[in-house]
Image 1 (tube, rainbow, N blue to C red):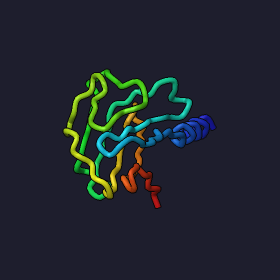
Image 2 (image 1 turned 45 degrees about the vertical axis):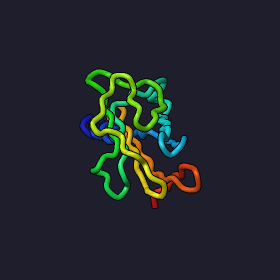
Image 3 (image 1 turned 90 degrees about the horizontal axis):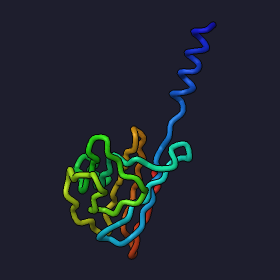
Length: 130
């Protein structure tokens, strides 16, 4: 009976997962990525990695930034191409173009979130997953 209780607890714990939420605004040259998390992860997000790629080619990073060991970026607003304190670039920021579908991915303490977006009609638009 005790083994069943432990197995049930383990399943309940692994069933819980958290995800970061990303929003986007700003201009074409320097979009601002806002990152939020569930209350359980508050009061601060500890951003460890962030990258942007074309949605059609996610392995080709247009910009990627990673924190040094034991460093994280407090706060939740990152501007494309501008490194948070304690971060280094893995890929230098390339110019974003209107009409191209992009994906941004953020990782914080093993939790991640992503957003697909495109610049149309003078502004960034979020593209919902099908």
